[in-house]
Image 1 (cartoon, one colour):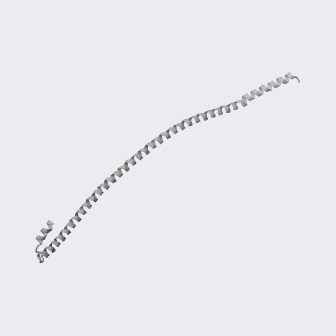
Image 2: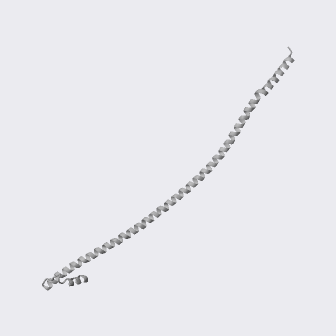
Image 3: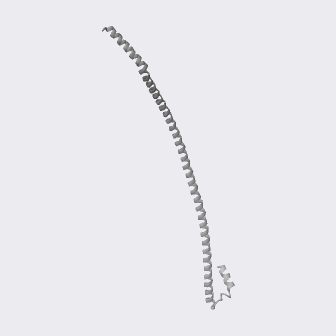
Amino acid sequence: MNINATLLAQTIMFALFVWFCMAFVWPPIVAALEQRKKQIADGLADADRAKHDLELAAKRSAEILREAKEKAGEIVNNGEKRAIEIVEDAKAKAKVEGDRIIVGAKAEIDQEVFRAREQLRTQVSAIALAGASKILGREIDANAHSDLLDKLVSEI
């Protein structure tokens, strides 16, 4: 066998092998690489989009939290104002009730004073009659002298 023929046969076989690989093996490998490249690019784009959405969500949640704090502050302020109003209203009602009780108590005291004076007048007139009876030495008839006794009681 000749070395040139062997070398020529091996070169032809190598060329056929390269052609076969380029025609049937290389396109699926290139397609798989392109598909993988596209998946990686889509994944990176999705990651960027997710990062942007996360930033927007963080801003939105911060805004909602701020609004909630403002509303809570308003509710607390309104509650405090309402509590002050209730306390002031209760104070006003208590003052009115206290004044009413004081007026009632004064009226009751005045009535008691009037009753006590009437009792004292009656007792003084009875004592005066007893004293006058002893001084005069005879008994004074209360019915007969009722005008005189009424006048005496009114003077006392």
